[in-house]
Image (cartoon, rainbow, N blue to C red):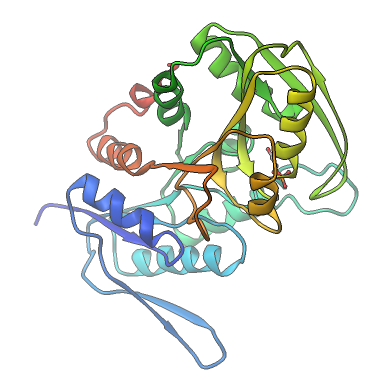
Length: 311
Ligand code: R5P
């Protein structure tokens, strides 16, 4: 019998996986997550996958159960004789710990990469890694999708004049530059300094935003502290409006409050993570069609670069 594409999901990414499977045109396979009394997890794939091309969808956001569920699913697929296993990780969590920048800290993203490969993943598909060089932590192929494919048409649809793109910190310069190059517009940089994770000690804007409609581009919105501070600063420097394009809506702590009380006109995010609630300022754009096309292209050995807008 010919090998088939079979798509399954971990618990946290179920909502997105259903849309990816629908867009791909095949039903989402069934997984039952059984638990022992103490909470120990045992995800069971409820159909034969012998000889099949299996795509397992799960974002690895904290808590660690999400990563662990994905690792167990990969192990189940390997032991069930799947031909080829792709871990589809729309949001690759723990990516912010990608270097040893202080003594005695882990490089968590490298450790997660090792675990995924050790469990039996043959390929990784993900989107907007915190730092693209994290791809190098894997010794298997990584298909790294870009949210510009989703965000650029949205910005075009707004038909805004006097656009300027902004990086909310120096780590985001390349991201903002991709937009600036595409639209042939200027970009500015917010210089952010943190003494500890989740707390901003100071921020300044490098560049002119007077009378501009500013679009801040970032990979993650967590507490929304970075974004709210950047938006305030940009408006104080004379911008006409400020909005944000953020790939991964982590949204922890007082994020919703910070967004609602901020000077941001809107925060546009992708559905790589489920949102806990709605907000009048948050607009969600789906990555389901993009991931479905990427799955098809991987399976048919077609180009992934063709899915990028700035290729
Ligand atoms: C950091 O380098 C990331 O790109 C984001 O800017 C950061 O994670 C956002 O965090 P928060 O929303 O808590 O300021």
